[in-house]
Length: 253
Ligand SMILES: Nc1ncnc2c1ncn2[C@@H]1O[C@H](COP(=O)(O)OP(=O)(O)OP(=O)(O)O)[C@@H](O)[C@H]1O
Ligand SMILES: [Mg+2]
Image (cartoon, rainbow, N blue to C red; front, side, top):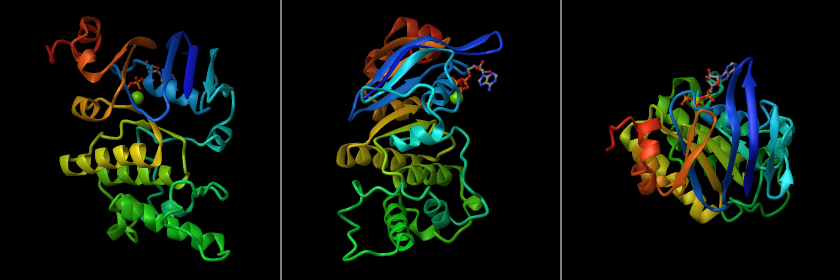
């Protein structure tokens, strides 16, 4: 579904992404792990058009997408969340969902819940969809709270919810589990699994929390020094000597 070929991105003299090639298959939840500074977030930034690659190509469903702007990438139904959550803190939870760009509201995912009898005003439709999504991620009781007042974990759920408003084909999640307590973590994992299995959304997610990766991701790609070091099931990765050296530093041996 998503193919990265010999991608390179430097900042000054530093090669953050260096000759990186990898593939994300449709319908799976692919994990991306690696040490701090391995280039994971930079890779996401290049894929989603926030940085232009210095070299290399990116294909989405066979179409070359490298060099497109973030809004053009968004139009392709490639959606991302950020390592540092980007909610609009002075808006309510519900409003945060309702400000997704006009015309982006897809019906593929939610049309079983949401089927207006006749033509309704788009805003009403958006509102109904937002309420459905909030119900799904169980943030509905907080819909009128300011997003800025949510906990770190709840903000991560809000990011996921925002991505669902866009009716994505693939969602790139940058550390969805960071700062999320165990209860919310279970919810987050269950939500991602449901979205993948029932709604057919493909996920590509960066995560340092190995428990989340083990539970959720197959396959797992390991990135080190800007390129792919290994790929396999979570279990294979756990026992890969090179990976243990580069990343886990022996703690899982
Ligand atoms: N905008 C930038 N300007 C300069 N250097 C950058 C920029 N963004 C990233 N880097 C550098 O590129 C390298 C890769 O950073 P990146 O954020 O992609 O790592 P990461 O794998 O996401 O790490 P972490 O797990 O800590 O989030 C780092 O050395 C970082 O300092
Ligand atoms: Mg990062």
